[in-house]
Image (cartoon, rainbow, N blue to C red):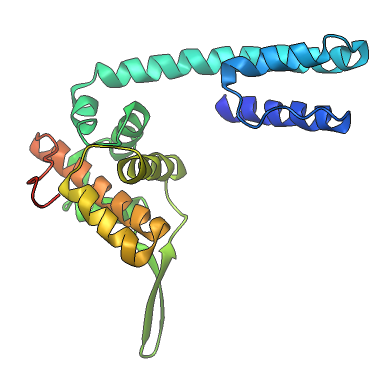
Length: 211
């Protein structure tokens, strides 16, 4: 629903640009409808073309908002998801996505195997004496990887809560770059979430000195 809503917004922006109308780049989802209506209300031809698209977008946006509200409520009412959300950066959608994908923590003999299942381990290029790790594989559950990537990005770039995991990621970011550091933290988060689920423990921030 969210993707289709964004597609319609981009289509409306593109049609308006043909007529020399450029909408602000940063418009909240709720303000988009009002901004477009204000722009086209004096032009009958544009109104005739774009109002049906606005109505379709409004229905999609309303449906997305309701589904988003239900999903977040389901996460808050689930004990395991609440435990996952003790990890800085992990929100309702990330917690639900990970729980749904893993389903049963006993499926994995080791927490480290979770990263491999979601294809979070680097691809390897081997030939003779050469063994070079590459970027992560793009196989596996795309939505789970995207949710965990968002969680890692929030932990490193936006969260003010310091932990040993964040400190490790920040140090890695200084030597390997932002993208590689986030991917490495994604793998760590997947391992930590599985271990928390299997052991029934909350996230430990680590010592303040280490952070």
